[in-house]
Image (cartoon, rainbow, N blue to C red; front, side, top):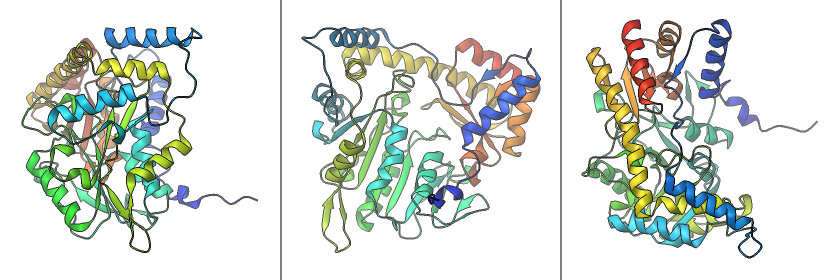
Length: 406
């Protein structure tokens, strides 16, 4: 009989969001007449912006004409999209990123999970706690950890994010090879200053480490003093890979388009100590296992980077930030401490009680779905995450229900 990859057996029995879905399904089955408002999973609710939608239709129309039909496209992405990304997201802010360092894909979740394949099995990995589960689970699957003991995997280095350090991780106290960072953070909504990112970049340069920087929520930053790319930090293009997504700023959760930046200056070493470019490794992995994002989707994505698209996506993120502001203000009025909700669509609330108990209480008493903090790690215990991705009317009603339940 064929042997399995036993690293999968180390994983916790259920993926966080699958467990939430199961509990909500059971509640709905038992209470079919009680309406539920979902502020849990960060899925968008508003339609695609007009400029994006028109470009999407144009791309589909091109596929219906023999003269403009396209088959397989370049695995790295069409140049028209990569050039727009490099110019608007990076070069406009002084970040030294070129179009040939951009890799278009079907999701930042996929890229942040797949990127570990280009690193050695014995790399020492550092992750924040709380943490987006994909960073941890994919390294468990790859065999870089021991067993899960008391909700932490042996072999990982956990960088704790707590109320005491304002939910920003300290530098690793032991040597590591790879560091995962996410700002604005999922789940906490915390942001990073230039000085804070400089400390991590300097650490990585001094210790020959690589930073995997998830910037999927960067479009929600409104504080202009905050960096919007790690490449705004001098030297970061020598030590960092950055992940971006169109899911939350342009409504592409169901359309699927993202991009990863792998600078050509970025180096690793082989077993003999020879330096190897990570750009070439990721390109090889990407072209081997991915056939490219569809042409109409890339056509729609390129519209995001036009002046009209930028204005419309700004309005879309403003809409969600207005929801987040309402949540944050209501939470604070209830006397609860929280972070996020100003430069992030997530609000991380300190409930000072078991987070799954808080989840069940809000579900049963208020009919509101949140995300329990314990699902993101040991330091998430006692917290819940609320998402601003819903209609304003539903957000107002949900917060009124929560206020009544508490």
